[in-house]
Image (cartoon, rainbow, N blue to C red; front, side):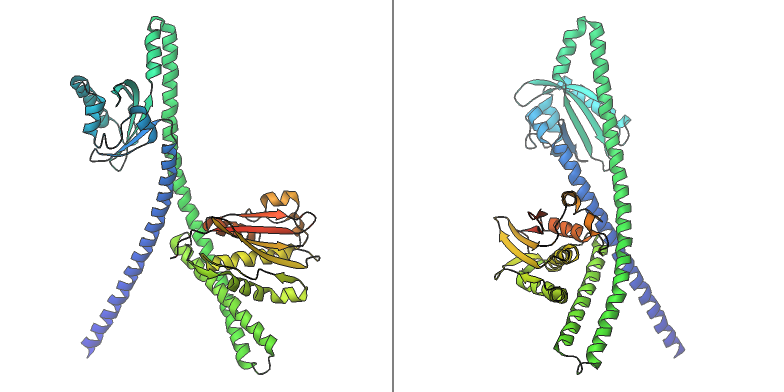
Length: 435
């Protein structure tokens, strides 16, 4: 019997250890995914820089096949990837003279052996273009840690022609060579600086990601406890005093429960954000009327006490969007109107229109409005109205609205009233895919 119990205990310990390992693997997978996404964004920035470069650029794989050439390369030589799929094809077409080709290949191989990762050995060579013309090109091959090779091509044909003409005038020739050498040195320094800055940016991106993750953990912890407490107390209130509460009291209980559930949903979104670094949108078909009903119910007490009228279109369409995000946008904009509209606020009007590409929602109020200097910076993080002193608020509401608009491939803007009031607009792309 003792042996049997011991065996069970061992199995439980092994099962516990296995679960811990699985959890560790899942955490590692999440971190790998975040790093991968960051690198994808950096690659996209690098791709744009390469495509807009005034120099020719090619990327050659470990198997010596051309992976990429930019438009400037094609413009410079006339060759496409179909013309030169491999290094062998390039050397055969760019250097049709066998003896010259052999010398170029020998020099190229020698330089590859001598230079280290990230270094380059600039070389000028004559190249035969697709149309038969010849150009003098300055080659700057850079070997990378992946085994691939990045090559930068500068057309110095005109410079070379001038150099040849200035052979008779040695002083001018030396000046031109010095100028060109300094230029190439600056290019090399800029290239090395760009590589260094990219590594620094990757480091800062990772550190920033960690700070955001810690902040998200903190917010999640601070919200979860109170929301659970409010929800539980409201449940008890409704359970024990249901017979005493009138319809308004019961309605308030339901609203409190809904608000608590929304806070819990926010905490859940934060947890999703932590695991994926950037919270993905959950695009679904949503009814704007239903979203507005929830927002109006949430603020009904404030609207009634301050006798503020609420106007909205009779018809609103279904749109593809993230339900929680659109609810947050409208909640933030209405809350902004109530907080900063002042004592003269008497009406909040919800509007809707559409263009070929966007759904456009608006929240208009007849409150005190904004000063000119406020309109330029109101959407920045932690920025608040100059006239908002003494009014509660974090300075994040409109910044969050801007972030949500951009995630929905739209934007947010405002239009101050002629004498008072303000209208906020948010556009949502009509082409968001459901998932």
